[in-house]
Image (cartoon, rainbow, N blue to C red; front, side, top):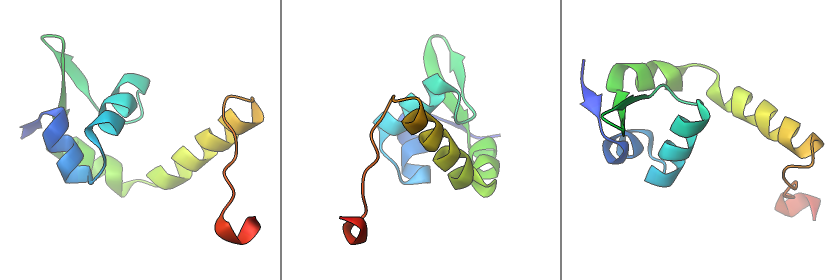
Length: 79
């Protein structure tokens, strides 16, 4: 099992390191704290990425919108 730092995980997933850490804190991606530092299993991240993750994140964003925690951004064709 290959263990990744937040920077390595962000490079693997092609998202910012800030987003990786935010998702880890919120429990949205598989992560563990080791000696107070976030670490990621490469295999678990690849498995996580293969699940219908986008659908899950979209449902969570819609829920946050309904609860007034965020605002809805309009696509260009909706403006």
